[in-house]
Amino acid sequence: MIDETDSQLLAALQRNAILTAQELGERLTLSASQAARRRARLEAAGLITGYAARLDPARLGLTVQAFVQVQMTAHSPDTAKSFGSLISTLPEVISAWTLTGEADYLLRVWCADLPALNRLIHQRLLPHPAVARVQSQIVMDQLKADAPLPT
Image 1 (cartoon, rainbow, N blue to C red):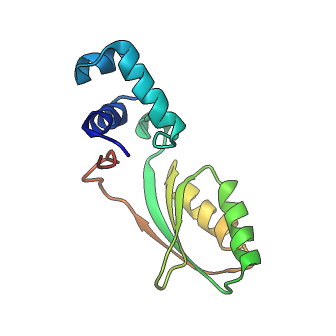
Image 2 (cartoon, helix red, strand yellow; image 1 turned 45 degrees about the vertical axis):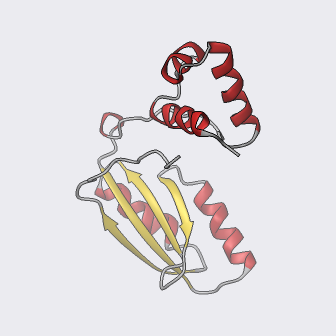
């Protein structure tokens, strides 16, 4: 569905989403209008789902990153929906996955400090009626920043 030029365009936009059509064209040896049409086609096809700025957590006062595993007491569509609704209200949870294995959910969270992480776990997650157990791992250092998808 995508050719080599599309792959290069996607890679360039993942590195810098605010490239103009002129800048994209120069990088891909295309005219600005050709680059703009390709970008619009990839957006319309759903390959590009949006654009976002990367923020510096430390400058925002966020000093603790953690991965939180959640094990549920019951597994039903209603409890999954209820827990999903809770997660959607928690700004500290920046991503969440359902898993196979012992944990049912894996949450990636950013908090201002350890007391904030403690409040998130003890006042928001554990009180949910379907949550059986929560286990957290605090990130000591991130060896590789969130990387672009391979194209």
